[in-house]
Structures are given as C-alpha cells and as structure tokens.
Image (cartoon, rainbow, N blue to C red; front, side, top):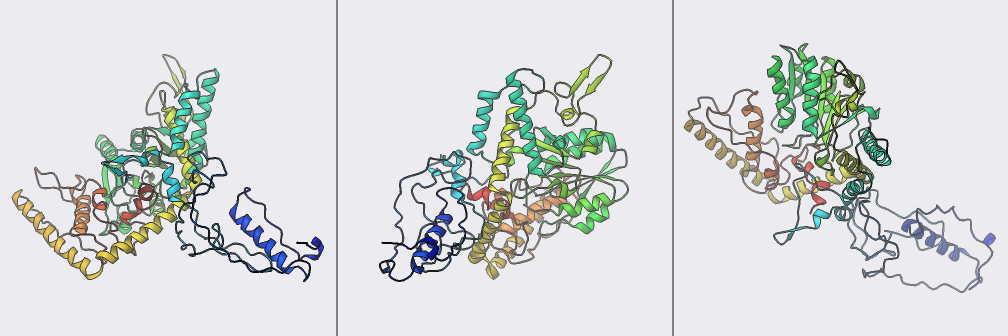
Length: 558
C-alpha cells in the first residue's frame, strides 16, 4: 500500500501531547485522525478499503504492560492489568458494544478527528479507593468488612501507614532543639505537615496552625486560654442543640467557673438551626459562639457563614467545630470568617491522637499559653520565662510528631482525590439511596408507618412519665414535614426521640428529664442509619442523615 506525500493529505489538527504513552484519549484521537487521512487520499493512490467489522473487545484478562503503581494514589493497582468490568459513572453507562474499550464513541469516517465523548463527571473510582485501605480487606464472621462507623473514626489508607513507618524508620527524633541530621529531618517533616494543613484549610499563614491531640483538646485549649482571659461574670456563651458534648462541656465548665451563662440555639423538626431564634439570643453580653459545621448526631450541615456573620455583628468571637466536615467538603477558613476552627485527624483518614486548632493570628498572639514546658519555651530563668511565638507557644512538651506527619499525608491523600470530587460522589450516592428507599417504603404507606409509630412512641413516653411521677407535659413526637422513605416502622419516631433529647433533656435546655431518671437517648444517629437509609425528605439540602455515610464513608467500605 502506497501513500501520497504529506502535502497531498488534508491538513490535520494539531495532536495534543499525551499525558503518558498509554493515554487512552490520545490514542483514540490519533487512530481516528490516521483513518480519516487514509480515507481522504486521492483515488488510485491506494487499494480500495473494504469496511471491516469492528468487534468489541472481550473482557478477557490482558497482561500488565506497566509496572504496578504504589498504593495511595486512588488509581487501579495496574495501569493495564486485567480489564475490570466497566463501572457506570455519574453521567451514565458505557454503550453496550463500543468500538474500543477506552472510549464511548469514535468517528470511523473521514474528516477531522473529533474529541472522544468522555463522561463529564469527575473521575472517582471507588473500587480503586477501596484498595488503598488495607483494613477493608479484612473478613469478620466470614464476611468482608463493611465499615459504616466513619463518624466515630476512619480507617487509614496505605499511604498514611507507610508515611508513619518511614518516619520511625528514617527520621525519628525530637524537633526544634537538636543540631544533628535526624533532628533536622524530623523537624522538616513536622513543619511540612503543618504546611499541608495550611493548604487544606486555605489558611493565610502557616503559623496559625496549632497541632493538638484532637478537636476536644483544641476546644479545651480555647476555653482555658482565650476563655479565661475574656469571659467574665454575666457574660454569655452560645452553643447549639446540635453540638457534640466536646463542644458543650468545656463551655459549661468555663461558665460555671466565671459566673457566665450558657445559651442554646434551638432546632426545628428537621434538625435545622432556627436562625431567627439565634438572632434573639445575641446581645452585648454575648462573648463567644461555638458551633458545629456538621452535626455528628443528625448530619445537619449548618449555615456557618451566616451564623459567623450574625455573631460578628454582635461583637462575639466564633469557634467552628469541623470534625465531621473535613472529610466531606472543602474547608476555607478565610471564607468562613471564624476566629477558631478545630478538627481531629482520625476523622479524615489520619492517625488518632492528633488534631488541629486553627486561629486567626491576632487572636492567637493575644492568648496566654495553656500548658508550660518543653517546646513552648524560648528562655527560662527562676525569675522570668519567655515563650515561643505562635504556634509553638501552644505546643508544650514533645508533641505527637509521627502522627502529625501522618496527618499531613492523610490530607495530601484526600486532596489528590479532590474534595469537590468526593462531595459530588457522596451527594449522587445519597440521591440514589433516597430514591431507592422511597420506592420501597415511600408515599402513603410510609406516612401510615410514621403515624402509627408516632402514636405508640407518644403513649410509651406518657406512661414512663407517669411511672416516674413526672408532672410536666410530654409533647407528642415530631411529625415529618414530608413523606419520608422508611425501611420499617419507628425510624421517624426514633429521630423524633433524638430531637426531643436535644431540645429538652440537656441540663442547660428548657425542661428536663424526670427526677431520678436518665433520658432514654439515642447516643448517635449511626444506630438509626443502620436501620433506615434516608430519613430526610428528598428536598432537604445536603443535611440529610445519609450524607455522612453514603459517599466515601460507606462506598469505600462496601
């Protein structure tokens, strides 16, 4: 077969440079352009082409022609290993018989090569992500492990495990005080992890990142340092009914020690903050507002920016608990506008025993140290002590160096996956869960279940109150605002009981439990979720209960 010189061929569009020699999109475009050029050549210059049927490749194993990639990148173990079954993406499934396995469509006649029709959805291979977590290969009672407890703690990808192992094998030393090579390595690794946190939070300065043991210690640090300096008798601290007890108890202790008052933002029947009521709580005595970004109990995503803006107008300082938010959504502390932001490493695929307190530089610089000794000391005499500048001023003693390095690796891992990609995948999964549950137990049948369960729950509550000799009025369980997808009887009543506990049974809330009796509270919403998927209405924005569990949290484990 002969070809005319290249000058006789139609002009071809510039071929994009491939990302790698095996980039499938580039190979497809190149093959299409070559075929179009051959079809457009003058007659007689080549033997007539007979159409050849193109058959879809059979899903048979192909030998690996690229080396295995290291774990922790969120990509398949072999670039071209045994061909896995195609996983439908968010934008739809691949056609039944494509011409080539690596694209959906390919023009097979002359003309300039068109770009292959690739899915517009973010590339998120949940099976590849699952392979990054060695714990998920475990078997329990003869079954493959399914992990739905990410709200309590997350498992660790291999890249985090390897990074901690590397630190202890090659870099282990104390930091900021040695003159030898290992001390330099350890200090560099520790400060590189701090820089990873700064990027993850979009902090203006790396000095605003303080390493602590977790979100609980971070909140206690603020309460004992900033609170002891600024809270006086008669002042008010505002929290919400959605808070984890780690964001309640430190403020209770501070209020009791200083003679201040703790005020509580109420929630509505769907677990959303009542911002109008919050506005009524704000006054010139309000010194601090402490709020969760995502509730650990209900999964409610709170309007943090609006709350921060309202608190700032009242002259209050704001602390945001981001422990349940950092693994599900992009966090930008500049955009939030809060004074403090806290989270724990083990909630975002990092090690236990490490967390972060972020604070604005002017606020941190004006705070006294919380603990003394070790890393926070600049100079000591028996008459006077000079402290290090921030952040070291708040990192007394020998810190959790190796796990800080592991936290940096965990944040780099989720950043490579892409927080927006994770959020998009989670919300798509949550929508499918809601629709599936609604198809099973939605509509009028679901409403009948709710009403029967609600009446039974109310009657049991009334009888318990009578037996305990409680004279207070027990309100009927909360009614659902919309038909709710249910998997059985009593799920909405269970959620109503939890909300009533949040509203009534806390010692600082209105009302209280019957004397001598502890409220029959549901400790976490995990127990509800294991019985029902998608208790919130389909119209509820991101705040549905399934949001926390239906994306990377659950699909990486199922």
